[in-house]
Length: 312
Image: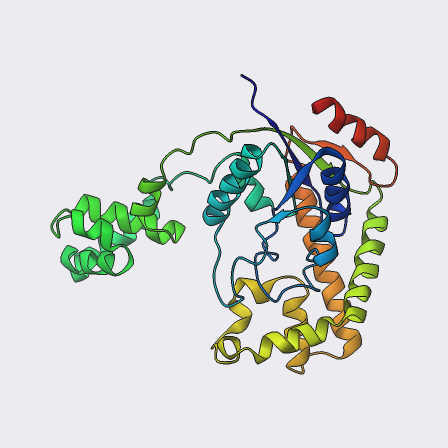
């Protein structure tokens, strides 16, 4: 039995993915699954170009406003939540449209996260030197701090397993127990058509980015960031610019501007430049998606719609 269809609508920032996702959702009975690392945060609305109430009334949206801006949200959590959303949409006879520009999220969902890090000679030598100086029992105590689950099943004298567990943690930032628990993920319950929306002329994209950022400023982006700064959890945070939400393009530059680091003109220039750099990184990643079909939003609308219709 053939799996039901789903669409992955990819592309750089400001390429028109949100508008097209809504259009396709209305035409084909779809629901939108956001694949955007900024839209998961509550309070990041204007600067993240989050679909507003009117847009969300046109089509149901998933994976928006999942976390507060001082909280973390990983690609592994996205993969789990997106899979659940897709299964729910399909179970109700609807059409999932995965729309966004966060390549790591798409990669986690469509191909799974990279496997556990392999052996690293340099890291192993470093751990052996530390063990020679401090003893394996001390390294086992360190393991208990970062991965109590693994430490509970590894004896304090089992040098080889202590070394491997710490090696994986230091290389990946994730406990080996988490890697082992994750294991292999089952394939998605849908077959996915990957479409990339990107203007053929890079200058067109740059103009769209500048025009959209000016619209964000007119809509009150700086007031939105002032409201974020006033939240007690962010006001008390020792390093708010290290938080993933505040590192989002536009928000970091606005936060620094409100700290007095830039003039209004300098802030605008830095934010637009950072957004263009983001788009360049997104395009570089997308060129590696060999199975994706590329369309210019201005010139190829008919071809794109025909491609979706054939797929369905």
